[in-house]
Figure 1: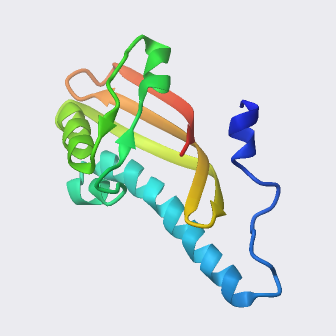
Figure 2: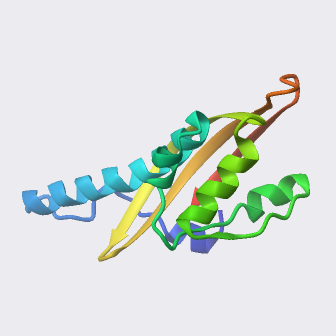
Length: 143
């Protein structure tokens, strides 16, 4: 992990003061919602659930799989916009590739209206027509 990536995380779980219960509750709620977006991203793909998958993105979201794809020689374009992301990913996988994602080591940092998250995501990909053909990917996600 580079120094820049490391600086996106913090040494403690909460930024809010323990003396301010309302601030702690608000921060915990925000952290849960932020992590849930990544869980919806993963499960939406696995279930091929368009609405669940779309709920993980803002209308103007960008999705960049280039760092992970470079590990196997692919160079996909950066996808921009919720409709483009959802349509592209589900079209690539539905009926062709079954996926199972696991998300762990989620860390969230909130600074005002800006949130940063790191997580470790493992994704098993299995070709539907040839189930013996599989790809297991495990990458840090830095959002």
